[in-house]
Image (cartoon, rainbow, N blue to C red; front, side):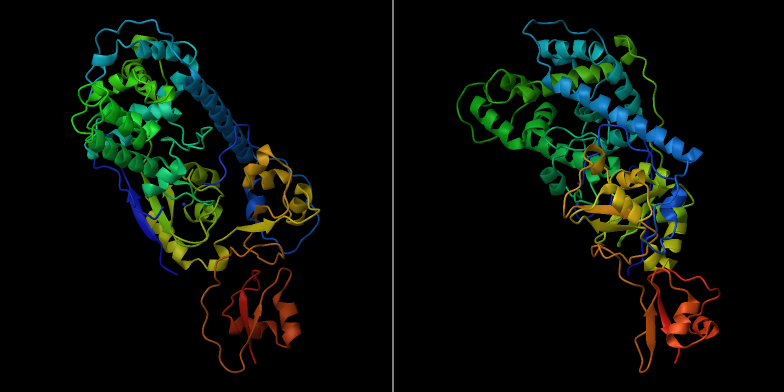
Length: 509
C-alpha cells in the first residue's frame, strides 16, 4: 500500500494562495432538510463487536453527544431555511415598472454602476431587503468565512474578485445546498460539469461540497467562460444557462444588435447581456441571473447602507490534508489526529459516508499542524484497523430495528450513518447500509468493500494459519490446534492475550 502523503493547505487574505490537488474526478445522497437524529455516543461507535448479541440497554447521551445533536439540528435548520429563500429567489419575477439607481458606492472590479438603474436590479434590491432580509443577513455573515479564499482564487485566474457574489445568489455560501435540478454545493455544480473540471462525484465522495476544491473548479470554469465571451456578465449568464445557449443567442443578435447570424463571438461586452436580455433567446431564469448578481453585490459591498448588520463568521482556518488510498473511517483518522469525529466531519463535508472511498485517492482535511503526525501514525496502522464501517445488504423480511440489534447499534446510530434513511425509513431489498463497527468483518451480509489484509510472509511448507473470528481467544485457538498460549504468543510476537477479529495468526508446528 502506498504511504499516504501529507499536504499543507494554507491561505490568507492577500497571502500565498490555496494549494489545490488535481485529483481524478467521484455524489451521494444529499443532506436532508430536517433535523438529524440524535447520534449514539462515540464510545458505542468504536466498541468492538465480538458477536451478534441482543440489543444493549438504552444509554443516555453524553454531553458531547448532546452538543453534536444541537449542532446538527442547527445545520439542518439552516439548510432548510436556505433552500426556502433560494427557491423563492428563483421563482421571484419582477414587474415591469422601472426603478431608480442607488447613488454612490465603493470601488468595484465588475461594472455595477452602469446597470444599477435596470428595473430588474431594483426589483431584487427590494427582494433582498424585504422578503429575504433575515436569511440574506445570515448569508452575508457566512460570506466572511469564504471571502478571502474565493477572492484570492478568482484573482489568480485573472478574474474580478467581486464575482464571489455568484456564490451568494447560487447557494448563500452553503456547502450543503442542493437545488431541485440536483446541483450541489456552494457553487451549485451539476454532476457532469463538476467531473469535467476534475471534481470527484460518486457514492463516497462529492467534492462539490468541498469549498476549496469546488472554488478552484468554479474559478477555472468562470475563466474559461470569460475568455470565450469576453464579458464577465455573459460568463455569469453562461454559468447559469450553459455556454451553448448564450452562444446561440449572441449569434442571433450579432455584435451590431441586428438579428443576423454571426459566426464569431468576439467583440461582445457586458452591455450585450442586456441586449440579449430583451430577446426571447434566453430563459427568464437566465435573464434575471445578472440583475440578481448586481443587486446582491451592491448590498454585500455596503450592507449598512441597506440596513443590514451581519454578524461575520470567522474565516476558514488553514488545514493540513492526508491523501488516503484505501477505505478508512473518519473516527479512526480523528483518533490519529487527536480530535473528535464530529470536528473531522465538519472539515470534510465532501465525505458522504463517514469514511474514505474503498478505491482511489481521497483527500481528508486535518487540523493544521497534524498532517505529518497523522501520516506517520496511519502508515503504522494495520489495514484491519483502518475501517470501522462495513456495508450491509438488506434482505427480505429485515427491518431497521432488527438490523440495528444485530450489529449492537441503536436505530438512531444506524440512521445517522445512512442520511437517506432520515427522510425514508422504509427499507428496500438489496439496499446497502453503512454499518458502524469496530473493523470486524464476520457478517454474512457484508459486501466486498473491506481493505486488503496486511501483508504477511510467504507461506512455507508445514506452516498453518488461523484467521481470528469474533469470540475467539488464544486459549480456544490453542485447544483447537493443540498448542499452548505461550507458543501462540511467541510465534506471533504478541505481548498480551488480546486479539482482534480478522487477524491472521501463525500456528506453530
